[in-house]
Image 1: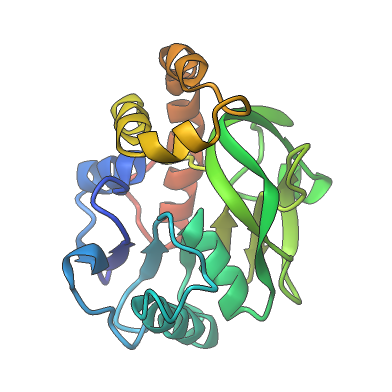
Image 2: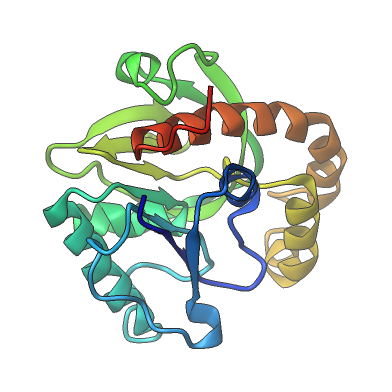
Length: 239
């Protein structure tokens, strides 16, 4: 099995639970930290899959963050060659853009714990089969995307219709299935200025209080989804 490529945008948004599952399984990964100046590979067919993580930048800010252009080209390469992509938050937005959909900012924000609802297609999807129709997941975003041509919507929330989609063997997750409790607490500290600007609409203390109560269930969802995804790459470690 070839390596799994992981693109990390900022220091505090690592692969979390997904990384732990791959490490436990002995799956070899290549971590490219664009936040540290590493260059994004130009071709996806050197890898068994590509994981593109989240970050605070917008897909439409390519002039400010030139590495986003290279990531879009990498994802386009994956789509052409059939290499599975797992896009998370910004990664999902980049996947949508590479597949021909618009990405844009909304006036609303989702920061904290929110319900998502699986569509009928989501309930039948191989990654999501058997999971609850309504799940509480962690969110941190204000941008969203249209569903790309040929893609299938798998989940929605009250504020954002497009939470999860599948296109070919690739998936775009707007929400953060990969986060751990320690990651969330770190994000609340690192993003203090953003939260201060949202005072009155987002309550960081409430997010902090709910996090220990909800992360174990989120981890179980993540274990199911990510292990099924890895099995689809040809990994035989999972039951």
